[in-house]
Length: 157
Image 1 (cartoon, rainbow, N blue to C red):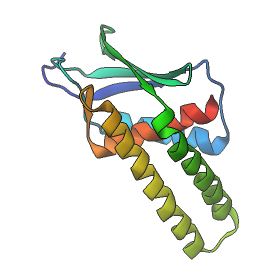
Image 2: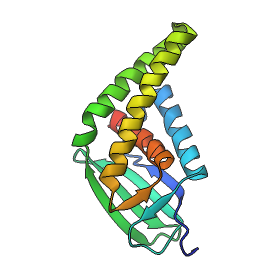
Image 3: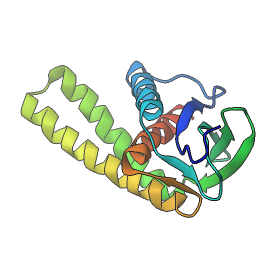
Image 4: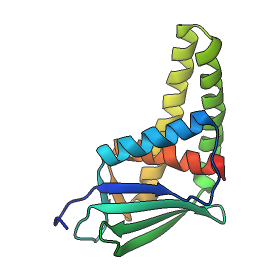
């Protein structure tokens, strides 16, 4: 265990939640790959990882179970999804429009929808960073990838 190694080495989504559409499953796979490849993840008050993260939904709450690579429990954080509901709903709607546009729209229309999608995604990422404040320190790119996974869990659940 590297002292001060504040990163995720593994991310798992609760397997008890079913699979989703191919588009959503693709988003999940890409987000996990990108997240493990490059991230900054620092549970406040812990000496260092790398860490394993398990994300799940329990009673409409987001549960972040954090352990070391060796499997020692580090922390479990439970976040209300209420601050995310509108953002996730908007993000889901714009993603549906985006996937539809990819199949049939002009490049300029796809680009416009994608800009809106990124804006909502950024808002969700910032909200996640704010909710984790004082619990887990993450950079914005890490928060973006985690927000994608929160959306995937929400869509599946």
